Length: 257
Image (cartoon, rainbow, N blue to C red; front, side):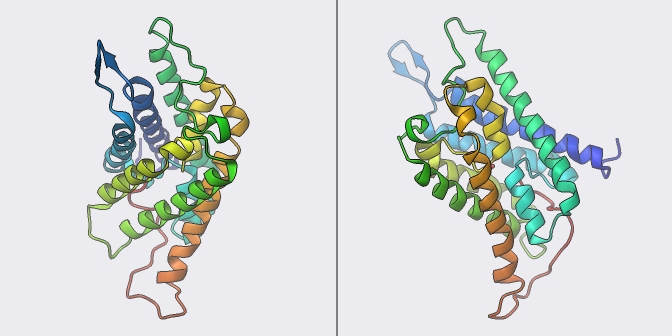
């Protein structure tokens, strides 16, 4: 397949989003809590946060050079808002990302179902607010956190992949940023900042997750738009003087939540 074709880009986005959901949510389902007799061998919040960061870091380098490595509808819309990605390609990327996320959720469900007594309901690392928030946080708290964290995520991505940024390090910055985001917000919402990640497990999880899925589309997309508009406004079209940077209209060279 020609890696410059739109089909190759869609496949790369599907592949990368699958890995993000399978690796990130899978670590929460299989490894966050694990008891061996009396010993706690689970990776906990820290391990899950790192797992999400590692999924993005690895896929940025593996297929980011094909599609831009968004793996996240909020990143795609942020890239389009910044002028780095064509709006006409947004729907195709979104569909690829959601399909990849659902396949990742399906793989987790298929593997976890092999454990006697395991039930998917409430155990698929779904996002939620109120009684479905790990820490019992309200809808307002979850919305603010998701918008703020997604906006900063997109700003980091746009900065790390800019023409004047150090070459070859974008994946590290992006992966570590997603890790930090999870360290902050796993107790708040179980961390989305990515509608495809939320969709990928919500319907397998049930237990209120599908009904609350709307906020994990709305808030990250709003945050993505804010980050996408804010970065060029502050540093490329700033009323305080244009920064000495090179603009670009090409898809992000390496990106993801």
